[in-house]
Length: 317
Length: 300
Image (tube, rainbow over all chains, first blue to last red; front, side, top):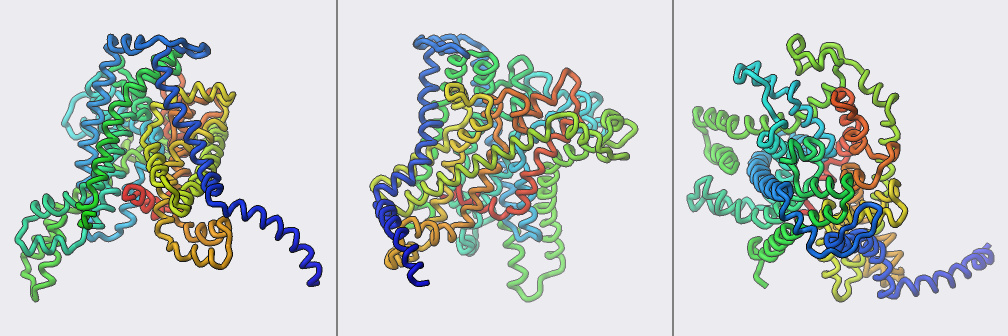
């Protein structure tokens, strides 16, 4: 028995020796480990990013390779009121929705930071809007905003507050506000749960010290909670701004950019011109127009990260 | 919030709290804490309630608010769900979505585990820059990539194939998972690996037998997160898939179920409900992992 064991063992040993020597070579191992991730990101992220910038300077359409046309796409877009409207609405949408999300999200996080019964259950149901596919909850909002059968209109009429149905998405400004409300609704859970995690890392002794010094509730919030929360707030806000600015799903599902192009975000306009419209070059140019805003948001994140250490009370090394 | 805690603590530190003060703070606690919390929960959950109740309402009640209270169903029906499952290709959309989500989750977990291990454990010159580059990749949103990606997908001959989605979704999953797993690997004591190295284990053995088993919670977090994100993805699926049977649930509901000017709200809501259920059920089993991965990724 021991002989057969030795026989079956020997060839495996030599093979493993060769393989394991290769895999114990650190440089080889590093390359092997990084190859799949870096490969995927290079082919489907970095290359398309570069290609997108190139496409923005060509007149590519679907099924036809474009030629370099310089700034023609951008010149056309700068004379296009729909494009300017999309820029305006993207900035407006991001600004208002971010303020709303963070105001309400911070409030909800502060509420959840109390001693509550069923705390984990509460946290679980609060995260639900964020888990459910955005398009599907957007369709629910579309139904809630229905011009004829809106439940909100019905409640208002029943309560005697209004005579007629509320116009949610059939004229420009109500449609814009409705979209922002839906975006805030979807964004609150993420902000609240992230900020709650930040709140829970703040040491209670800081509040005790502040209270001994006679700080009021507002002073404790302003001079203890807020500065301690700032690093995490900055990161969450950067993410939120980037993904609100480039939002697509909500607008596409609820209004598709209408009425009369008044609720187009840059992303939905790029899609409309690029894919169904077939003007890939023009669509890419609209997408590229988003990049300066994103770079700005990323730099914001970087500087917020760099300030992290002293804010958390660690040594300044 | 802080003053609510403070008022709780004050009576316990004194011997006998005055009667009126405790009533006062109870009332105050109700107005400051429970009332807003209750409003938040109602508003956050209402669209789901509305979605569910619409899915089970017969058309007669759906469009008649005057004789039926819209907040309740008098005679629930499965007609919308029946129509969805047997008169549309909804089951095949669900299957496609599931396949794409599982495939891309698996692919990104594999790639990001290896990458995170290399960056965190096989420390090499510039490893933190590779980590930073992968983090920055997360900040590139799909909205600026889908047009060039569409041309690449066409060139690769993958247009209208779910395989395209499986290959493309890792672009937003890998950065997230890698970042999450780096954090997890960091929490595993390096001494364990050193012991194994001294005992003569190879690097691969260490990864498989020591590091990975210890990182299982991290892997679960990354896995369920990737699954949810790929289930929810919309813009790539909308741009790359054309034929009806290859569509994912979110895209198919918007493009296939909406026919003409009269919307079939019952069927639409049933579709949205059924499309949300898999992630919602999945979520209910792993809530803590979701919370830890969400907050972990933000804190890293």
